[in-house]
Amino acid sequence: MKWTKQALYGTIILVFLSIIGLGGCGKTVENHEEKKEETAISYKKIPIELDSIKKVMGWLSNEEVLVHCGHDFKDVLYKFNVVTGELKILYKPNALILTSAISPDSKKIFIQLAEEQKSKLQVIDLEGKILKENTVDTQGYLNVSWNGSNNAELFLAYYETENVLKVLDWKVSENTLKDVPNDSLTPVWYSDNLYVYVDNLGEFLLTKGELYLGDVRTGKKTYLRNQVSGFYLNNDALITFSPSDFNEYELLLSYQYPFMVDKGFLEVPKMSMNDRLLFPYLSQAQRKAPIYGVLPKKAVHLELEMGEYQLAELDFEERKIIPILDLPDNAPIQVSPNGKRVLYGWRFENVADLKTKKIYPLLNIPEKTPKS
Image 1 (tube, rainbow, N blue to C red):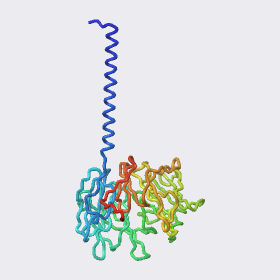
Image 2: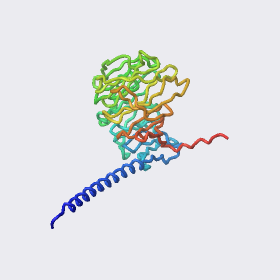
Image 3: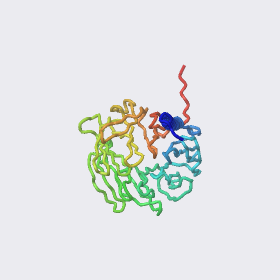
Image 4: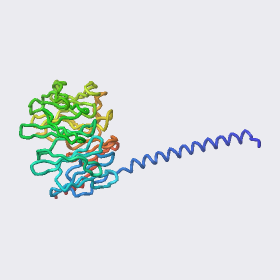
């Protein structure tokens, strides 16, 4: 069969148009799926009575959070999926839970239970199975810091008396409690054996401080630098907080990454309450991921006014603050493991979507009826 030039050109054109059409259809399907995925996410509220919910404790996965509920000294821990709305009981100890804390790898949960004259310590897995138990001689709330390097060790800090600080190192696998000499209620693990803390030198206003590196093996501490009032540490990224020497209305945030290698700084508006310095809440999903913070839009004295706040990304390399959305209060945040959403609020009662830049409530809070 012989082809004429006209027929051959016509066939080539038809094939070419078919390919374009198929490509166009493929793109349309892809775009449709992307839009479907974007519009599919609607955040669900926790289907539990408001009075029973004590606090959302943090992320267990990209979509699941740990919810602490209870009344009449009988508490319950739930797993709740903020996207699907699925709610499951994780653990029911038939006792009052004072404190709980999720391990950095999100595979274990520390729990402090109230008992007469003391507290019971437990570590459970995500199926509610008790892995270890111990006790500590206090009924007060413990300050807890998981070791992110091994996920098998915790600092437990509390005041034995008004002026006597006690810090314990709980090695979960060995189930041993060891005293750690310390000058801070909030030591934070840096590695398997090293930790970071600030000694504010007894200065209540937090305008002074010295940064130290402690070693649980030797009990010794190493001086790192002065003029540090507080800090944020995640893996090997360290951000220190210091009052600005040049502007009384600013707080200086110095960024070291890797640890103690200077990578830049930012000046942010300063917050205080009765002249006592307050630090911004920061969160980072993982190493090298963006760092987010709750920052005031201008310097604020909280005893005089509430202030205006925003969720923002901290870009130390470019020395700029990237606003994301307005927030009603200076309250804690926690970024999800995949970096797509952020828990926000004193009870983590909201979730902020970093793509839509909107905030969604997780609790069924009744709307206020306007006064007539």
